Image (cartoon, rainbow, N blue to C red):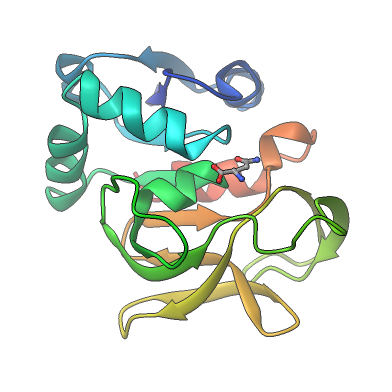
Length: 187
Ligand code: GLN
């Protein structure tokens, strides 16, 4: 059975653990660098990226996460997790892991449209995925090795670079496990 780590500093950790367990994967809440060596894939949850980044710096997790990704560990960031993975944030200078060659904009949908749901056509899925967006980022620019798997009005909301996957939306807040299955398939 695959063991999937969920970075457990802040955010919707429990929801990711639940959906992983529903897919018969073993979930491990990761708080320490050593625990990165015990997992087959890693999820960076949604939450508040400034808080998660600050705590990741304090717990010495930024460099170790970057290096396990460099070594090929599959990783999936949702929302704040996508922000943490990005190489550049256009509207903030908070610390990043920088493993995903994209520019993201935090809270890109503004106050009017803070939270919404939209059915999404996702590359590789044969029916729309229920996209749940909460103060979501969008991707403003993608590097040459980044594939766009879903977009809204030309703004990418799901991307993949090698074994790194990121969504602006929150599959862990639905009962649809298909995006988490994509992560499991990268193992
Ligand atoms: N807006 C949040 C941030 O900038 C992300 C929101 C989320 O993860 N739902 O970190």
